[in-house]
View (cartoon, rainbow, N blue to C red):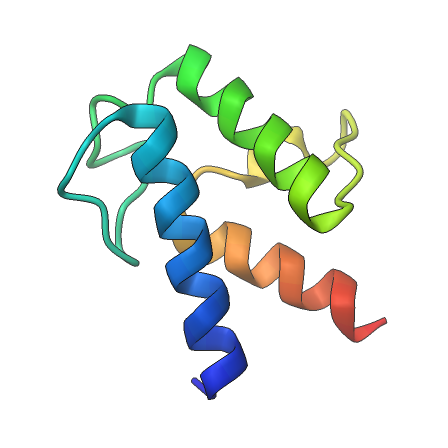
Length: 81
Protein backbone atom coordinates (compact mmCIF):
# COMPACT_ATOMS: atom_id res chain seq x y z
CA UNK A 1 0.00 0.00 0.00
CA UNK A 2 1.49 3.36 -0.97
CA UNK A 3 1.22 6.66 0.89
CA UNK A 4 -1.85 7.79 -1.10
CA UNK A 5 -3.67 4.53 -0.33
CA UNK A 6 -2.70 4.79 3.34
CA UNK A 7 -4.04 8.36 3.57
CA UNK A 8 -7.25 7.34 1.82
CA UNK A 9 -7.70 4.45 4.26
CA UNK A 10 -7.22 6.85 7.20
CA UNK A 11 -9.80 9.22 5.71
CA UNK A 12 -12.37 6.43 5.25
CA UNK A 13 -11.71 5.16 8.79
CA UNK A 14 -12.34 8.70 10.04
CA UNK A 15 -15.66 8.88 8.16
CA UNK A 16 -16.79 5.54 9.61
CA UNK A 17 -15.65 6.58 13.12
CA UNK A 18 -17.58 9.85 12.88
CA UNK A 19 -20.76 8.21 11.62
CA UNK A 20 -20.76 5.21 13.97
CA UNK A 21 -19.39 7.14 16.97
CA UNK A 22 -17.16 4.14 17.59
CA UNK A 23 -13.53 4.61 18.63
CA UNK A 24 -12.39 1.13 17.60
CA UNK A 25 -12.57 1.47 13.82
CA UNK A 26 -9.59 0.36 11.74
CA UNK A 27 -8.85 -0.78 8.19
CA UNK A 28 -10.29 -4.23 8.91
CA UNK A 29 -13.65 -2.89 10.12
CA UNK A 30 -16.81 -3.93 8.30
CA UNK A 31 -20.53 -4.37 8.75
CA UNK A 32 -19.72 -7.91 9.89
CA UNK A 33 -17.52 -6.98 12.85
CA UNK A 34 -18.73 -3.51 13.87
CA UNK A 35 -22.27 -3.59 15.34
CA UNK A 36 -22.51 0.21 15.19
CA UNK A 37 -22.26 -0.01 11.38
CA UNK A 38 -25.96 -0.73 11.06
CA UNK A 39 -28.29 0.11 8.17
CA UNK A 40 -28.67 3.77 9.16
CA UNK A 41 -24.93 4.19 9.58
CA UNK A 42 -24.45 2.42 6.23
CA UNK A 43 -26.60 5.02 4.45
CA UNK A 44 -24.83 7.90 6.22
CA UNK A 45 -21.43 6.47 5.27
CA UNK A 46 -22.59 6.10 1.66
CA UNK A 47 -23.69 9.72 1.64
CA UNK A 48 -20.32 10.91 2.99
CA UNK A 49 -18.39 8.82 0.47
CA UNK A 50 -20.58 10.01 -2.39
CA UNK A 51 -20.08 13.69 -1.50
CA UNK A 52 -16.40 13.46 -0.51
CA UNK A 53 -15.17 11.34 -3.42
CA UNK A 54 -17.71 11.85 -6.19
CA UNK A 55 -18.75 8.21 -6.12
CA UNK A 56 -22.14 7.61 -7.72
CA UNK A 57 -24.17 5.11 -5.74
CA UNK A 58 -26.36 2.87 -7.90
CA UNK A 59 -28.56 -0.17 -7.43
CA UNK A 60 -25.68 -2.26 -8.79
CA UNK A 61 -23.04 -1.04 -6.33
CA UNK A 62 -24.99 -0.03 -3.21
CA UNK A 63 -24.16 -3.30 -1.42
CA UNK A 64 -20.42 -3.03 -2.12
CA UNK A 65 -19.65 -0.49 0.64
CA UNK A 66 -19.67 -2.93 3.55
CA UNK A 67 -16.06 -2.63 4.72
CA UNK A 68 -13.25 -0.10 4.94
CA UNK A 69 -11.24 -2.17 2.45
CA UNK A 70 -14.05 -2.36 -0.12
CA UNK A 71 -14.75 1.38 0.15
CA UNK A 72 -11.07 2.22 -0.37
CA UNK A 73 -10.92 -0.16 -3.35
CA UNK A 74 -14.02 1.44 -4.93
CA UNK A 75 -12.58 4.94 -4.51
CA UNK A 76 -9.19 3.89 -5.90
CA UNK A 77 -10.81 2.22 -8.91
CA UNK A 78 -12.82 5.35 -9.63
CA UNK A 79 -9.83 7.69 -9.36
CA UNK A 80 -7.64 5.46 -11.57
CA UNK A 81 -10.04 5.82 -14.52
